[in-house]
Image (cartoon, rainbow, N blue to C red; front, side):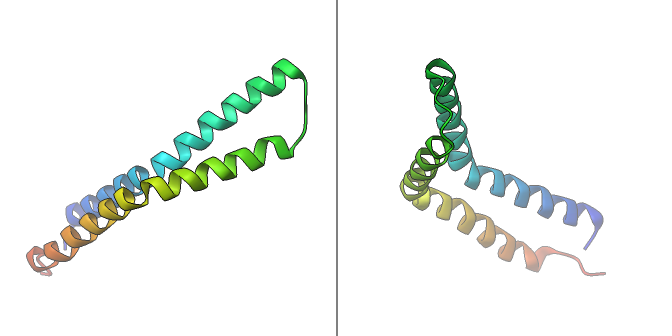
Length: 90
């Protein structure tokens, strides 16, 4: 296994991680931004107002995108296992 193989595996693993987590991160960011704007306009500074909606939205997005995220991860793992036989160990 050369350094190129290791870098390629790590690069693909990071891309899969970013792809699988993107829906939840983006939805949490959008909800957080919307709540921040709402708090700024109304001057309500309740701490639970920021956390509870984010948790609910991220959980809903997780449930909605779970099949797609599972498919992305399983595809990566299958490709990784199939590439094991092609890796030169010398």
